[in-house]
Image 1 (cartoon, rainbow, N blue to C red):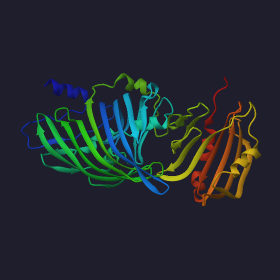
Image 2: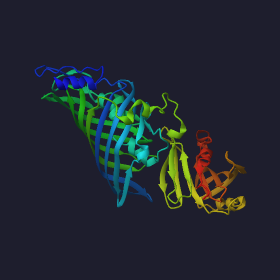
Image 3: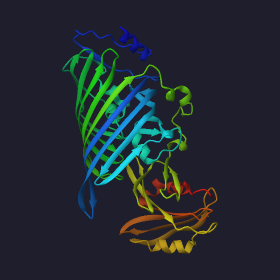
Image 4: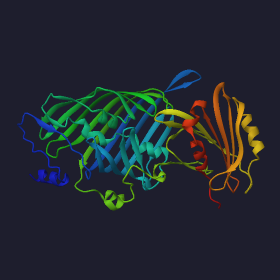
Length: 442
């Protein structure tokens, strides 16, 4: 009885259905509501291969990864029977990966541990109210299993052992992290009931889109539902993940196992109380300072706070390569180059930069569209060249920029796009240039 009372307190107005051990059916349903609070512990284990193409030949690279996420979540709004807006506070968020022989580690800094998660028709959208995340930090909080879809794994009605049910497209999109669902035949089944616990399974395949790439999943999962507390408490989710090459990532073939543990909280933790969430925008209009991403040059030469439609796809000691995507469609590629520094108050002469542009390997300019010296909104010198031509025999329009700061710091930016994408790209390349910041004067 005490456990039942505590479940009532934890669930607020959502009273659990009393479980009768000898009943022929049991109700497996959750009704998410604003104000729900849960604690989550997620572990991920991934192994497989990444497939890249070099000089026309495919090459398979070993790919391994592990991740751990521990966080508490407060539901802020519900739509279509699932949480649509949640606030999360991470006490732990770490991931490590090995690609061939290269090791990669990611962690979430202390000042970016409060994250707002939005479930949108076009996929998951996360942002940090404290300020811009880096792309790695964003991936760390968006690429793990999304528990906003847990209620959608259940039948939402009374069932008996052996009964099956189909998962909704909204639930599949959420738990599979798709931007859109193409196919879905995932089926749930109640497998056993004992000691106040119901065990269910999920099997089948799903196909969707993620960042413009086709993703095919074969899934087998088992979950535990507490019939007294009336919520899902544990889940083991296994998927065979086949991803085709997309605009920003290579193809891959991996096996993924996620283990999830879940506990309802009677009250929101201090980090998710009303006062802590006071600066989160209530509507769909979110300030750019919260949604934009941050890049810090490892050598301290510049920083960049940019729209998240730009995706980092490559980085060397001198170059940063980004690709612009809109709803999965590749629109343009930008290359940021740390240019040689000039004396304070000076910059590279325009003619010298133009000569360097015209000798770019593989580039043949056929028609000059723009050649202008101008300034940015904050008064920095900016030189811009726009030309139509071919790059490695492919017709393109290239926009070349050279930006100089008051202390002689300089960055060159080249944006390449197909002629038919000029309207779609618009002024987003200029916005990228304007977003570059140089170190403050020491």
